[in-house]
Amino acid sequence: MLKIKSVEFLIGELSKWPGVGPKTAQRYAYSILKNALQNSTAAGGGVPQASVQNVDALIQALENIKTGVRLCPSCFNFTEEVDRCYFCSSPERSKHTICVVEEPSDIERIESSGAFKGCYHVLHGVIAPLMGVTPDKIKIQELVQKVSENSVEEIIFALDLDLEGETTILYLTQALSGLPVKLSRLAQGVPMGSDMDYLDERTLGRALQNRVEIIDQPSFDKR
Amino acid sequence: MLKIKSVEFLIGELSKWPGVGPKTAQRYAYSILKNALQNSTAAGGGVPQASVQNVDALIQALENIKTGVRLCPSCFNFTEEVDRCYFCSSPERSKHTICVVEEPSDIERIESSGAFKGCYHVLHGVIAPLMGVTPDKIKIQELVQKVSENSVEEIIFALDLDLEGETTILYLTQALSGLPVKLSRLAQGVPMGSDMDYLDERTLGRALQNRVEIIDQPSFDKR
Image 1 (tube, rainbow over the protein chains, first blue to last red):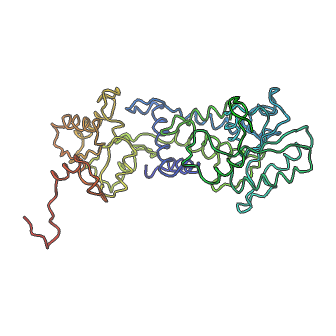
Image 2: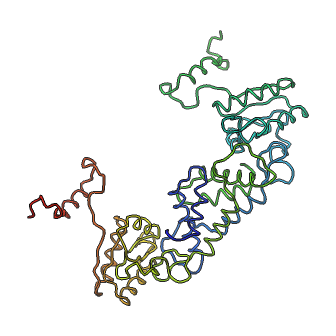
Image 3: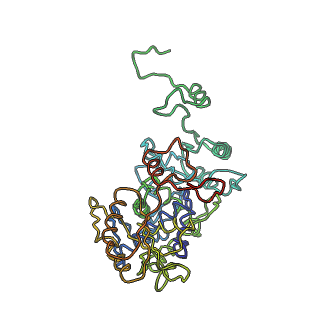
């Protein structure tokens, strides 16, 4: 694909996506090209394709994203609604429990578990001073304000278990310390389907520390 | 990203790309979304990103592809030029040697070797009756016509070494048999940097069959 400026431009744009290198971008660009020409009358490509990509549909999808999607003013999740997002405007979701996540994509993960029926608060990042992300750059002030103004009963932190996530939880715990709200975090322990042989020491240590008494099996002696 | 139609639509479109499943498409969609909102005034995402994707630039790139890129009328490579593609219109490329490839992307691979200074012919597929690709669906007739009308001296087949590639070479050899043109194919043998331990029997057999006499080392006896 040498000497074709518009293809190089497209490859350049696609290369900016997460996990997409020049080779993958090239592959995508060729696929788009092929389909663009297949849809036009000038072409007549040979191989029938299982999923013909319509370039117009892709452009339309991007335009929709650009013009239609905003941040929910309450929880900062992405939304298309006029006012608040699906969760914030749903009468079925408890407004008293708020799950704090780093990115909107984390919401989908939590929703798929089906174990949470409250609302969310998206920080849009975690505190990382070395990366230049100070507490004022993420939606921390908005969370504190929401908690102090509304009847929030519990805040669940669902952040990554790394240094930045821990720092953010620590910071938020202090920032919310004066308010009458219960703070909690996701349980740490052995993941489902795991093999004891391959567990790391810290996970196993935490799982032992936070061990849970077996109470729902009547045949066990309860100590 | 539940309940947001335009995001689901974008994910659907991205999922049609080669090698992109719903998970990867989701990741790309979130990245586009994040940057769309970061570029608009309404947002204020926290984490600074190394490469901010401008959605407008992406849309522009797709529009350029849609309107600007056509197939070269001579070799069926992609081109932006008004008349013929870079190779067909360049006075430095020999019009007497034609390299036959399956897809335009193969041209870049061959160009990167720097070993070919002729022109190309893109078949846009290979003969695959089981997939419904009969000889009339790919650019075979156009090649035969080009060879009979112009002073083509040699045709080099650079197709995949699979059943479809071999079938296509066989078909083309018969179709071109009456014409005064030399037909050749890429040498088969041991690839560069390969380990003798891991070569398959067929490659090794072919490499032995097609062994090359060492003639450029004067210290060797020439038999």
